[in-house]
Length: 224
Image (cartoon, rainbow, N blue to C red; front, side, top):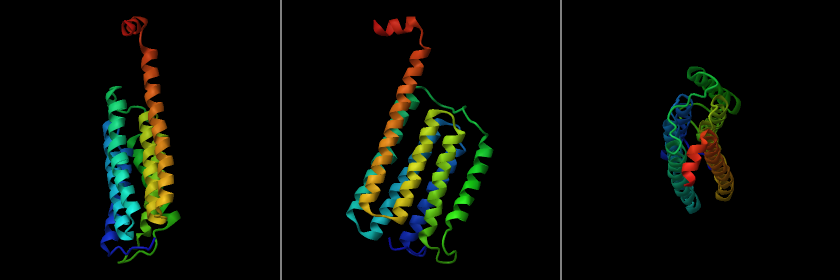
């Protein structure tokens, strides 16, 4: 993809979208409420759809516009709604207490991983005209933060959100580096299938846990 100057409208919008995606990952890492996990992920996905739209406008590719619409519908609307309806509301989940470390320590680790991503990948030439290659280390940082969410959270729902954050980070890197429609579609479909399987497994495991806790009389009432 032809690089964009930060002084151009597309470059500014793409960089701002990347920063918002990174901040949403930090917000998920620093929260204990399940509904906020889903809300931050939804905002992150909506911003990702906007970033795809920016790249589609710059490259004038109808395929990328279609991909932006699919990202908006599936990632920004469908997955958050399905997670909220089939998992949070059905199992009455509100607060995540299964943390392997404190929130402040998680945020410090997240900041360290972000710095590591910038030092390892590099953000290109820093100056008045900051190149959009700065999006790449941000995308790597989002992937690392999603992995950290999966490590420091023990609840399945929180780990699922961590995987979805990793997916968004990989998607952001793809549109910032490759930006070819077939590759992004193939990668996106694979990651979305994995996310769908994780959602179904979480739902089934939740049902199994509820049935294991139910008494024989309650089960008998359900069968009548």
